[in-house]
Length: 279
Image (cartoon, rainbow, N blue to C red; front, side, top):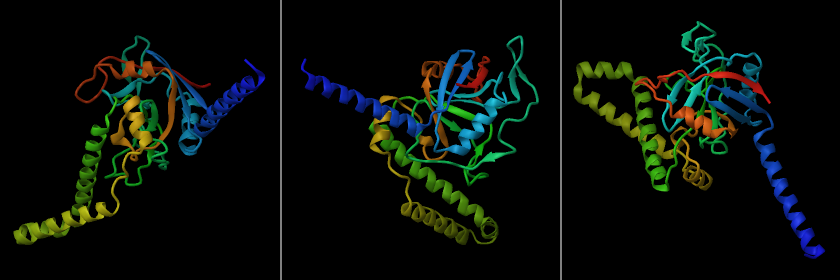
């Protein structure tokens, strides 16, 4: 092999290394080790969601998550933790300890939803939150978080989901308009059935027109390729703050995701976090 070929290969290696480093810089350098009863998971926190990054680091350094249970598992979707009132006891049985709360109350973190840059691919780390009806700003819980374990999605499935998401947003807007006209609707329902139905029809048309002007963004090519190759939870995209991703131990997260659950999505056997630390 002559020197020219060697130099060309060396330049190619440097180029590939540079691309890898640029990717690492884009998603941040802070790595967090999550030691669970099933094995270890390492996540890397994004630097472009600094409020969520710093809040998570603060909680980790305070030891808030050490010994807590995974409180919610949705098969083929997410594993969720952060309810600090649920801890493992010495006999490894679950216990309500009356800790600092489940994260649905108290301090909230302003939304940092950077969609579609960050989306719900398998391994995404995101913050839980209350629904839009009581949390229109989509502020995140300061405590609860989840890791996406979702299954693969074909292009046809994503297209069907896109249509369902659109219909769901129209329905949600229609409900919001009904709440805004609740007093008028109640009066008409008691006095003029025809006028009541006419107002409902008008609100439905308004909801459809508003969504037609600002429809949900279509899935990008990167999303389509990633959901087909890795899987994820695309129906959550743009709704929650994604602030990191799993870089090691995804099989452990998937194993936790296969834990049997009850009707309320609570694990039937305790799966807990031993310790979380900054690497």
